[in-house]
Length: 67
Image (tube, rainbow, N blue to C red; front, side, top):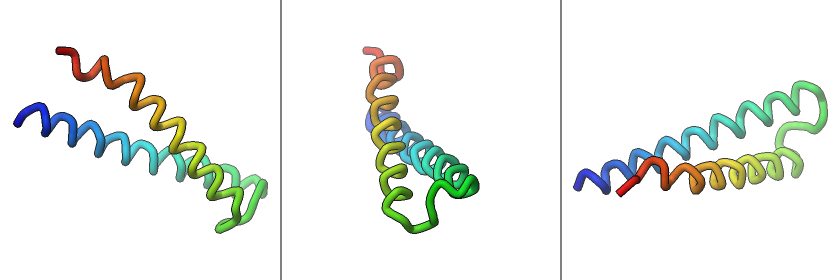
């Protein structure tokens, strides 16, 4: 039970981190007028930040869940 709770908290924290990271990146790029809100570029930046976050989560998984 404790392991499933740790996994759930780990996934939830990475989801929050991904959304926060995507928000910061998109806000910065919109502020410098690189693209407009709701454009395809904003969606692409959102997915790119998701891939970066996923790779970070995978690389840290073994550090968090040492057996």
